[in-house]
Length: 413
Image (cartoon, rainbow, N blue to C red; front, top):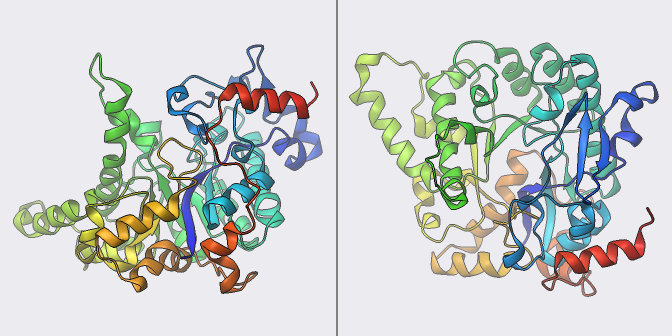
């Protein structure tokens, strides 16, 4: 087995902007701040980012999982240290990874949405340079860099897309439902110049669940479980907005990856939308010459962590439209046992070896235009070969307190 994850997450290192912001802007750029209680966060243009909690639980005992904010000292080093991340990827047999940002927000909205737009755009470029030059550049063939955009300025978005495309970046994170975050929706022409540039440059817009949370009106007394369970289904809202907005009538080659939304909603949504286009013809909706199913199969990539039932429905979605994700270090992740979890589900769903390769690496590499064998031989990229490099990696359950002690022993104030 070869495994490429199209959805992981990185807790940004403290020196990210210090190393990548232009010298004249460093003092005004995002600043890493350690609060008195040990919680780490970022401050930029007078605003403090929400702190990390459930998004950095790798190795913690489950009874310690919660939304409470933590600092780097509480985390497994692979959450924020790109070198330790490689070791954790090896331990899981993961060849390559796309990492959504944390400090800037999944779609870069926190970093880009500040009063000083010029400074925000400079910070966005610095973040992208870190992803491309340092994260991916330090380990060729292991990280697929992901960019963010200055979302409040479409002209600046186009310029940044062109800049990072020239550096080899093939995907950016983009809001799944912009109107849930005080940005224009996909209906109308606001995003047309961005979509045109992404289509022309062959840059995938990776839309992660999270931005659409604001669309849910949560009842009083609802536990966090309600949001966690419903979150994946919000990808269906994103897909519906893009298709009914006529996006692919105008931009037929635009590529969209829907991250962490699973694939369970896809067969229902395709059935529903295909029937809608004939049964509700009185609305005169124009999505172009293709059906919703044809649009999905040509323009979309869905991802899954574990889908014991829906892997049996791949024929309805299309074999080319499904890819695997690890989601390290979030609470949904199957690290460090992803190969075992996957194989059990593949066997139970009677998935062939050829399809396994499509789901675990081929579809992702094709969609993101990334060659997994450019720097490594095929024999070096398998689960067993990578795990052989990680025999000294401790994947046992470890408490926050234990990580804190280790951190204190290796870091000075």
